[in-house]
Length: 231
Image (cartoon, one colour):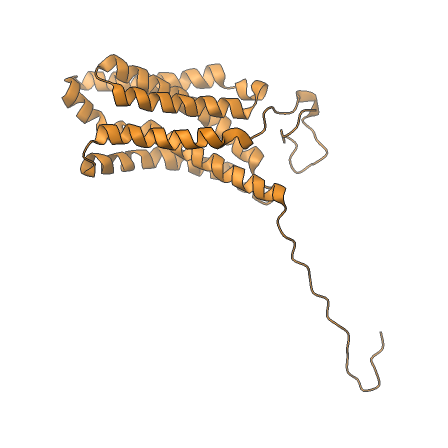
């Protein structure tokens, strides 16, 4: 376009439009944050009892060998959940398995709150191990699936940070309760109960079932394993 005779360019500059996030994108980010919180809270609950076994030993008068057996019961629960329920989320959906894991964590906290002998501690640790085993696999996959497109490459790292961060912060929070709380054993169970109950009530946002195996390759090449709708 030629300039006017006075040599002044009077063309109006084009202003780039800033696209606002869509409601679907906002919902996915909210769901991702919820999953990360729940993953962290449940994994934190599995390691909260660690500094408190000395208090349980003084209260119930059991030996160091019994403490070792209680620790091994947790490992049995984790391995059982990984071997038995590892593929269930592909068949019945992520949400039911996440709710089951949160329910195991909640029941485990109640058992620890009411425990007055070693067998009850063993049951509580077994339930805690089942919760951790279910969440380790299912929540990791759910976080990857729920991540927005611009965070898809970092979703696995986010899940790892939630997992390890929860496991590491559990003893820290528990140690603070032992040091400063008037009733640390009750405080620990109450904390786990509250942390597990909130994500259980809010988990319903997540898709029910994944896509069928013959429909895994979707039209959206950025997320070939997206499982939001049934085929």
